[in-house]
Each structure stands twice: as structure tokens, then as C-alpha cells.
Image (cartoon, rainbow, N blue to C red; front, side):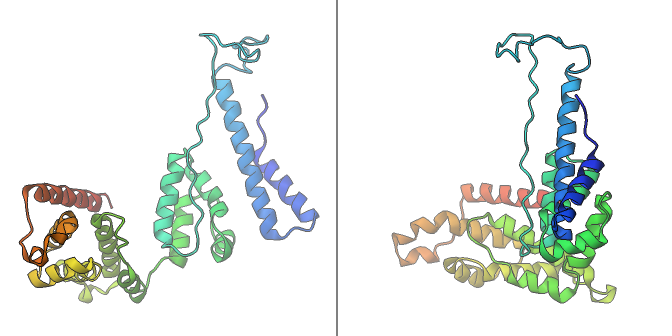
Length: 282
């Protein structure tokens, strides 16, 4: 088995596209694709060698696998393809997308240098051009920081606008919506001068207001009437309302019944534990 020269493969593809009149952008994509193909080929060769093939330790004559015959001693090289990162659509929060890209890439077994080298394949438009012109192709941490410095929300008004535009789509758990609100509010507070920092109480109040604004219509009246003082109380009301929403056809008086119960309490406890764990992991 012969490994390919990754750099040579990339440069050859680049030159071929340029000679045939392709744009710099297209030629660079061809270079990246060729390098990835050569790298994947080398990984298969290395895996085959690790199993004894091509090194003189495996049977040189026709093997059972080559003959289509299975035997207990035969070795099978299995390559599992993990899900690849999704391409950036230019709309979603860029920092969130970079976090998912890194997680997917690590899950696929990419090294830091591979993450930096292949990032361009998942960007387009302005993001691709900026990355191509200004970012390192080998140091992912430097790569990531440079892109965030240019594209992430860094002005307080931008972050606050994003915070105020967040909506709960009802299909996700309320704890997920709460986590996003908390992250944007924390980032917003980091951008403020030291003498203008918001207190935890103030931030919690802003988060509760956004949650109440996104609550289902039936729950809004309950939230406003009870005037919850903590985020935990808001979560309890959200969950209580969700559990009892199907039973509201029992009559108008049902809306005035105090909501509660052991099952709901257990559910809310789990919700709060999940939220706490997610905050500690950030």
C-alpha cells in the first residue's frame, strides 16, 4: 500500500483548476477536497497496515476475504463514518454554529489541524472569503478566535437585540429556551463597563420577562397574576400549565384552580437539575 502526498495532491488539483480557467475560490475548494481525499486514503492505508496487510505479516496469497470466503481468522477493516458538521447557513448565531462544528468534528475523530484546514468547506460567501484571506489553516484555536472577533456579536446592543428576539417554539423543553436566554444575558453583561454591570437579580428579572412574553396565552395570565419572584417559580408554572393544559375543557373554573401535585414537583425538580447541570457545563 502506498500513501499519497497530501500537499502534492492539493496543489495538483489547484493548478489543474487554475489552468482550466477556474476562479481562485473554486480552485481553493478543489485543493481542499483533494487534500481531504488523500488524507482519507492514507487513513485507510494506515488502518490496513495496522491489521497486518501490506507489511508481510498477513498471508500474501489469496485471502479468504478476497475469495469471498469467511473464516474465524479473517480480519475485516471496518470504517465507521460519523456525521459531518452542517454547513453554516449565514443566519444562525455564528458562535453557536462554531461550537457545534467543533463538537461534530471531534466526534468524527478530526485533529485540531484538520478542524482548521477543513473549516472552509463548511462556510460560504463572506464567511468563506474572510476565513480564506485572514485565518490560519493549521491552528484551529487561532482560527476560531479570529473569526469570532470579526463575526460574533460583540456590541452590547447587538447581543441585547438578539436576546429580545429569541422566541420559544413550544416544541423544545422550556429549559432549552431558558439556557439560551441565560447565555445571551451573560454575554451581554460581559460587554458592559465595570460600573454598569447588571446584578444577578436584574439579569434574572430580564430573563423572566422574556419567558413570560413567550408563555402560551393560558399560562401568561397565571404568570402575571402570581408575579413569580424567581426563574424556578416561572419554570414550575410553565410545567404545571403544560401538564394540565389537556384538562382545561372541564370548565371555566379550571383556570382558577391552584396548580400543583407530587408528579409536577418531581418533574420540576428534574428540570431544575438539568438546567443547573447545563449552566455548570458552559
